[in-house]
Image 1 (cartoon, rainbow, N blue to C red):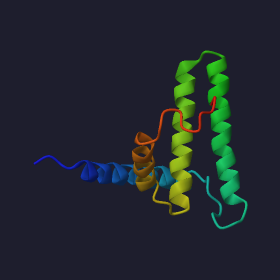
Image 2 (tube, helix red, strand yellow):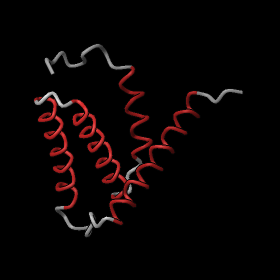
Image 3 (cartoon, one colour):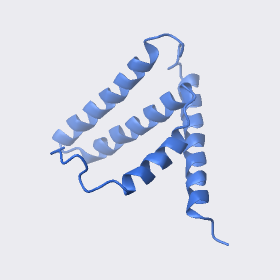
Amino acid sequence: MEPTLYEQDLDTAKAINQLAAEVHQTALEHGWWRDATTPDTFPRCVMLICCEAAEAVEAHRKRNFEQVAEELADIILRTLDVAQAFELDIGLEVVRKAAKNVNRPYKHGNRLY
């Protein structure tokens, strides 16, 4: 019997959370986490994700598409790391958000970007 879509989604969420745990463990082992309890930690982490996005834009500007892919991967990895550090169920949220986006209207909000 094939797994239901819901079961597949749960497997996807679990896989994402497992990757998040591994990414965070690597970050811990490489000294990237001092203390997740200081008030500035979360905003600083989010700004580092923004920096990766800026690096992706710069790589795209230079038409270095291999570097673009690497920077986009950095965005994902940093996001997973932060989610794990703050004990967020990022796997479940990714699955929920993807499902939510399926039912959104075309260009919802009618904005240019």
